Every structure is written in C-alpha cells, then in structure tokens.
Length: 420
Image 1: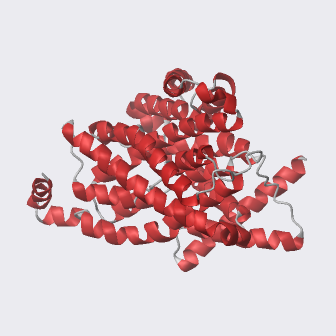
Image 2: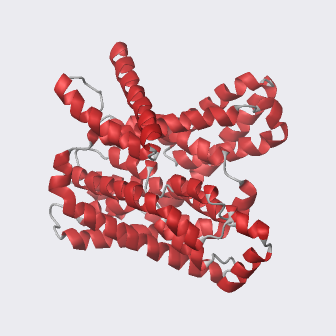
Image 3: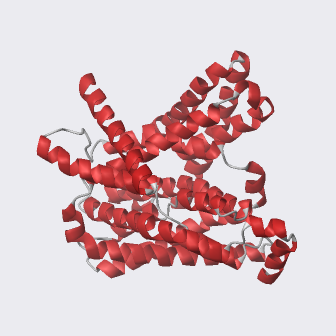
C-alpha cells in the first residue's frame, strides 16, 4: 500500500516537472502546461496500464486536507495587509454579497439554459453557481504587476479572491449538504453560514496565537517552517474534521495572526519562509491542474460541450453583475472602485484552483456530478485559454502603467479625477 502511494506521488511530481519543461519550451502558463501534460499522461496510462490512484471518491480528502491548507496559507502570507485594509470594504462586499449574487445568477442561467429539471435540478445549478463563484486571478495579478499597474488593483483582486475562497467553500458545503440530504432544506442558511464563517475566524485566532507563542519559545528559524506547516495542516484539519467550521477561514486567520506578530522579527525567525511556501504552493497548484488533465476525457467535451458553453456565458454575466453591483454600493459608502478597474476585475475574475478543487471533490453518488464537473472544467479552461491570454491587452488599455506615472506624477491624479 505504502509503495503504491509513493509510486503514484512520484508519478504526479514527474508530470509536474514535465509541465515545467513544456512551459519553458513553449512559454505557456504553468496551469495550461500542467493540464496538457496531465491530459497526455491520462491517455498514456490507459495504454501502459499504470494506475495513477486517482479516484473521484478519494479526491475530496486529498484536495481539502493536503492541497487547500498550503494554497490558502501561502496566499495569506504574501498579501499586503496595509493595502488590504484600505480596500477592505469593496473586498468584503465582493466576497459576500458579490458571491451570493454571482451564485444565484450563474445558477439561474445554467438551470434555464440546460432546461432539464430531472437530469439537472435546481440544486445542481446551485452547486454549479457556488463553485463557479470562487475566483482565482493569480495569473492576472502577475500580469498586473508585470505591466506596472496600480498595486491597489492587484491587492483588491487578491483580497477578494482570498475571502471569496472561504465564503465559496462554506456556501458550497451548505448546498452540498442539502443536495445529499434533501430533508435538511429547512436549515437556517444565514445562521449556519455565519456560524461556520465566524467559527473559523475564532479558531484561526487561537491557532495563530498558539503557533506564534511556540515559535517565540523555540526562537530558531530552522523550526519556523515545521511549526507553520503543522499550524496550516493542523488548524484546517481541526476546523473541518472536528468542529465543522470553515477550514479556509481558520488557516487564513492563523496566517494573518502569525504574520502580524513575526513582522518585527522576520529576519531572525522567518528568514527563507516565503521561499518555502512559494515552492510548496507552486508544486500543489501544478499537481491540481495535472489531476484536472488526468480526469479530462474527450467524451466529456463531446457529451457536455453545450453545458460547458452555457456555464461559461453564465459565469461571465454573473461576474459582471456582481462586480458592477458591489462597486456601486461601495461608491455610495465612499470607497470608490474606478470604472476602468471594474472592467479588469470582471474579465480577470478567472476560476482556478478552488473551483477546480471543489469540482474534483463532488461526491459520485450525486447523479449529476459529472455534468457539474464538466461545466466547471469548461469555465476553468476558458479562463486559462481565453481570459488569461487576453488579459494583458486589457490591462494595458485600462490600467495606467507605473512607468508613465513616474515620468509624469500628474498622470495618476488626472486618471483618478477622470473617474469621478
């Protein structure tokens, strides 16, 4: 059994290395290269008879307890807290109201578009909407920074994605509970959502404080990585497995607490820790897209191509409605999001690792799980191949470059005045 797990793990890592080589040769995005290599490997293993060990029924534990804690902790560790505080109002609006609006619009459009209430009931549409509502604009953020776009815009997208991930997973879990147990339809959704969300924050505070105390007592940089890895995995496991609160909110809050306390002694206690989290996140991110490639089949596209198109259109419309509505409310509350940024945020709201993780974690006992998974795969692939590749042109058009602002300091001021 252990040898089989080792063999399968080595195979996944080998495919990610092949993806890195393909990325270097063809100058592709790493996610695209990983999907391609995973798909090719998936076709090859059927011929040579190799068992990857990947099963739809076992993916949920792998995704939730191994991959998500690292991805969430790494993203939280590198976020600019000062800029996040500045844009916290629109971030919270997008991650709560925006998420609900996006979910409902996507669910309504997919339900009406497919028009098969027996094979694709309303609860299946809600599951699709909850998954597609999770954004992951990491590649867009990288493009923004390469183009010299305002750091505030990148922080706004990154902060929304971080909180959006937590709320999307909580909403997905609630809808999935109803899908598996229709008798629970009468549960208090708002109260349960608040309890799971705030419970995760409270547990994260405790775990973050405990981890900080342990780190200060140990006082050695060599122990920091061990303690933080244990804090990420342990806090997520306790939250999801024992207390039934949001694991993502727990990990995110714990990371913010530890980061805040260690900021003053980062050179002595946390030297090199950023590099460690970066390579771990990069590896697991690539593995997740490799798994997507492995489970994709040509039959999926032949049988569900129309459902994929419906989901893509629904996701784009829902994202536009959510961004415009939340930006309008934020403007009324005196925290204006420039109109040009809203276009970048709409097109740059890619669906990535969280949406992919939730789709891969769908229970196979749901009759429509394969349809929902196919639709989410279609949305993710559209984001990678179309939105991601065209984002740089949109950014150059709608986000003023830093170099231009350095040449003329009035450029940015005139730009802001024009948006008023």
